[in-house]
Amino acid sequence: MTRPEDHSTVQVETDGRVLAEADVRRGGEPGVVVSAMHVESGHLPLGVRARLVDAVLALPLVGSAERLVASVPIGDAEMLDRMRERSDEMRAHYAGATTIVEARLVPRPRQP
Image (tube, rainbow, N blue to C red):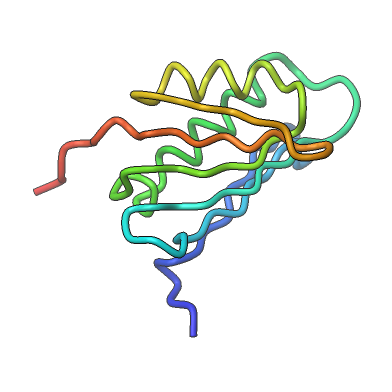
């Protein structure tokens, strides 16, 4: 059974409309989290994709992980750039209409 702290969903909304969403869960290996990131099709306001990445990385589940494996829409430069900025090391490869990103996360200090 999945515990609530093993799974999260984040959304980026504007004017009550969901523009981007990510499903985040613990991976099969210790210290790994997996995320599937989706954005609405069509023109989106600048920064929506970066806000989604930031929201995923702000989750406690991700903050305690060493590595993030994420699927993002192919060719989404804004998401890839933000992940590169926010991680120690990042690799990406294509899988169909998706880019699989593996990022070594910058450790966050533990809260007291």
